[in-house]
Image 1 (cartoon, helix red, strand yellow):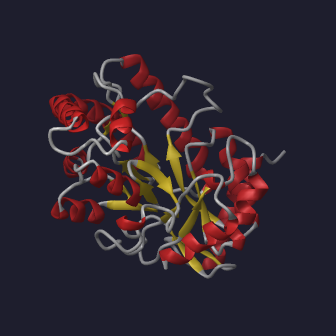
Image 2 (image 1 turned 90 degrees about the vertical axis):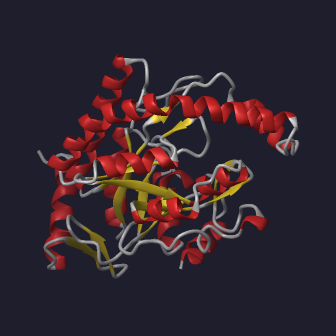
Length: 343
């Protein structure tokens, strides 16, 4: 009996043979090339799965949205479980859509209230790190045989004395100017986060020492998600340090326009030189915008005075997947407009 995974693999292999390309897969319905190992001459514009799909619900809706809005494929995001990977890829391939990007690690399903996946970069909990590494391995094993090559890796968060809520409150009240309560709070948060940086780097190293060899053996590429605030890891500076340290491996970053805008709203955006280096290191490019310090809005829906993430910031490297992301309540017209803004 042929399993679902075997059927998808056979379909993927037939696509490779049809294209006649050793290092890529040609999507004939869209006329685009899906980069394979060592092949970076072309890019695909992808619809983020979270625009319609969440843990088994909305499969036909996300495939229809991606096709009708003119996308070449779908990027599987964190609102999916490992069991969703094969059905999503099968439905996408049937519609002529590629799936080259998957978030990692993925869990088995919804976590429920006040629960989360274990962090790869957990600072103080070895059991949590090992559990996260196991989930990451399971995500690779579910996705790589089906043609996925790029993995957007979330490493974790840092527990600081202050939580996000008070700073968000001060930001909303526009109390971040000098000598105001929000400014003092932000300064304390940044100082504490900087003190954690050495341990954050060590925790990230622990994760990368284990998951990078897994990726190399499977000819996969890791793209590190960059923090949008002081509570997440790694920061832009830490991400560049890690990419440099592991530069001989298949590793880079996810450039996320909304996260860069949010950092800018807090006054802690990377310098132009550092942003340029991050862009050069990008393996996945997420096209979205922020409203204040809230990320994840479609292009054209963010702060009007913040410009458009598709046109601001460093130049986008050629040949890497571009993911158009936004909230699930976005209308089809809004998604199509965001797709056009990418170019």
